[in-house]
Image (tube, rainbow, N blue to C red; front, side, top):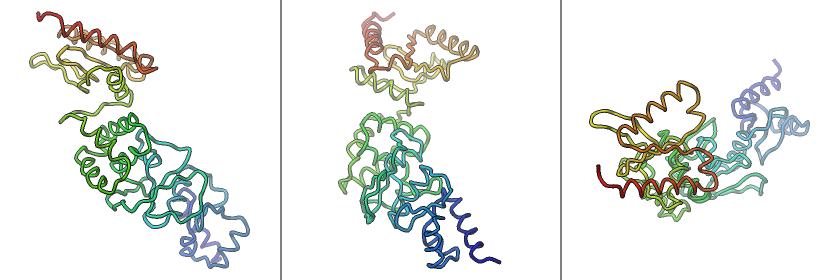
Length: 314
């Protein structure tokens, strides 16, 4: 048996399970000596990404591999975080044009395409694993996004995480309380968003629905009730994206992706008829209505609110 070939096979299998990336310790565990490692580096079989972190030559370069390599270069307890963590969790605020991590201390040289946050305020409970990469939990990711993203984008990320069950309001409130003592950025944004949520409020069902609520707020309209269930006595009429119950105005985000085809059109028409029969005013808002801040659509909704609030009771 060729010992060198056997060691290379073991190392290649390990790298294949880790986005083509490995460390010097993995090579030694596979059975390669310092001399053999030096020879492979000299032969160009490995590409050095960071000190003691390599990619097998010929393995495709991927964002996941670059992120894992940066985390391994960061040493013990270095994890993907902030916008890279948002990418791994699939929540708004995600970015793939660079990699971002958090570690107690970055001892490596500056490296293009790597954003590093140093902190000791990172408990084991703040860490999970996605795609074989150590990463901040969704809750901690939301907290960190508050320090690097605009307020509206963090709100979209929060709604996404709550909707998908990635985090709970209770978990987030406890996290804010714990980390605010360390003065970490992100706390004020997340605290403000949580405080604005009324008890029992449902999450929006899409990013565009969140944008609808944000447009209403930005144009001076009252905060609507999201995912509102409409009943007529004991008869369930339907659940709408947002509503002003006192004025009986039902707001729906009208996306072609979910409202196309003859069956969907007929279903939506019948639902609309039921709403009108129950005394509600259905208002559809589409992608074009939200461009440039949604001022025109919001003005129409504001007028409808005035008309229906001031009209005499029937």
